[in-house]
Image (cartoon, rainbow, N blue to C red; front, side, top):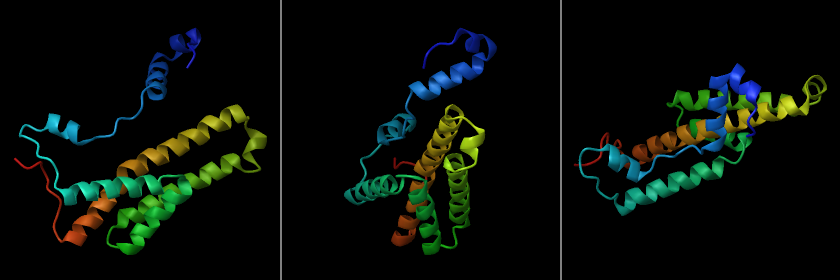
Length: 159
């Protein structure tokens, strides 16, 4: 991102935020991070738990291709587990974000806004939806796996 002196002077917080946002990847929590946070000794997950984590990551990546696949994944989950109402809410929010994205690429807004204005808005909506899905969908899968095993996940690492 090129340095624009006037932008830095007029909107210093916005400039710092954008610089950080676009230069640093979003860090995903992993087992090493949880071990550092835990006061107790961290044990390796069992083979069964490691397989469940791998499957969760694989399914999340598989459905996080675009807004259409994300929206469908939320709705499919809701159909399998109608007691999880917020999965349906996530489907609706994702679908509405998709409508906004479609409007940006549609026939009317490009007549009113320049591509220079449209492109960052579209990328903002896409990235926001992808990051939310990356956080929320594994939690849904954890619920599903816990229900399948008929036991809740541990609330804290084993000591």
